[in-house]
Image (cartoon, rainbow, N blue to C red):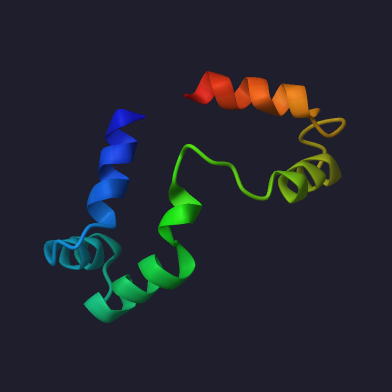
Length: 84
């Protein structure tokens, strides 16, 4: 998790090399890389310490039969604790 957090910190830093690296990795122009990062993957979405949209994720998991029933709040809290 430490390496993931460091990667996120780098990808959303003010370092001008970030967008160049991301564009090269994704094989797209720098303008596209910046737009994808800023509009489609805002930092709040990729931060590992917060889970957003759990209700819709659980509903989809049940609908697709990945789990038999939604997790309880206690089960979710336990999973989050394990991830940290």
